[in-house]
Length: 210
Image 1: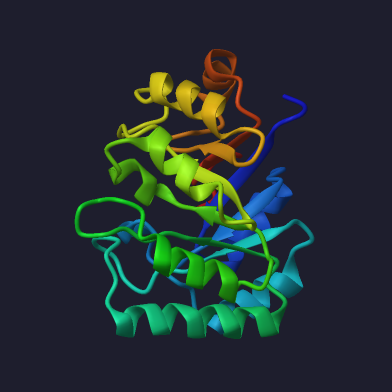
Image 2: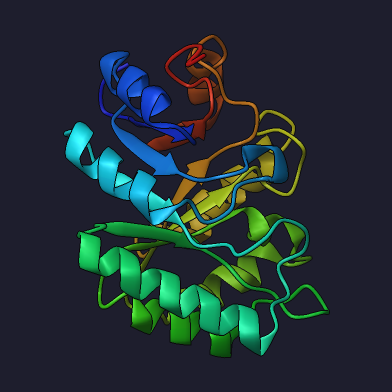
């Protein structure tokens, strides 16, 4: 399929190399994918940036669990961003919510500003927000927030098709939704035919990376 971006979710140097070899267009580099992805080690990030030619996004998430962060955790996230900027990381993936599952706009503004103009993806924390279209309108005010990683509030992108279609309508062109949630090389053609998004994300989006 031409004209779409396939973003592979990876957590090791070997997976990064294999994803690139299999045709991934971009990488999202994380640690602890068993927890939904956390901030990777800076040494791994440095190795990956040297090893691959395709763009790399780096996850900023200090722990698994919910997306409500303490001041100490927020400071840790800012420190991680600064360290990765010094390595030349071109893009970041992050998100933050209030205890009421709304966008934590003050913290998000702070983190996006810390990214110094680099493109930011708001990750699947968006799927916890009750009114996703209203949340998208809030995100549009942040200049470098360019992408939204989402399964449409459902366990999988296929199950969230209706909400994903609505998000495509309300987000574009300011923010580009990236459809995620059990997206694989095998089901991508059918999903794309149903959805028509321009970008997709998954651990097996270009095949098995093991």
